[in-house]
Length: 213
Image 1 (cartoon, one colour):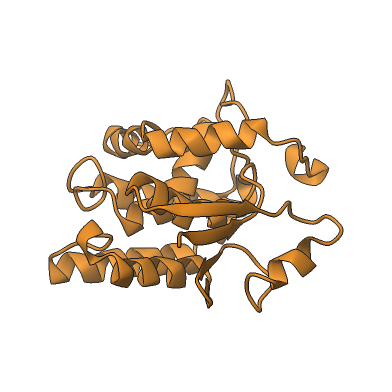
Image 2 (tube, rainbow, N blue to C red; image 1 turned 90 degrees about the vertical axis):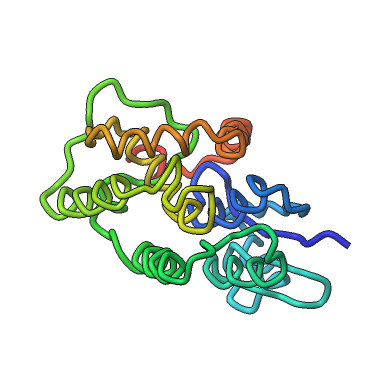
């Protein structure tokens, strides 16, 4: 039986992208179940997937796993051959630290540059405030330290976690260093990432307050 991943709108749900991208890029079979955010009945539907009533959530038989980081940890244990975390212990600790930093950080950058995967790239860079600039500098440092096309050579958990930030950099035409841009280009070229964007563009659901940001 295939696992089911419950996600929100592909246009807006950056947290849903993370496990979806990992599953798709690593060719792990799953079924997606999309629940449009902030419409009547959406929370009730999401409560059937996980007790938090939030996405993403993974169902594997009668087991529910929620929160993107918990889902990725579960997948790493279930599919050890996929090398979701780096094989080297030091790299693995570093990758987990980066994912936790992403999980709880970069609030100013997120607020200045809201997620919208179907938005076309801006012709001119978006102006962002000082706190968001500081976040962007940290993001640049992380991306510039990539050990190959991706953060730890091959695509893995850390890349899935930072993919939405790559999308924001691209969408808002934010200038980054050449090394950071090379990493961004590798994420943007992923067939799985392109598939998510195409899915976002095909959606009919629109949250007006997010479209106008």
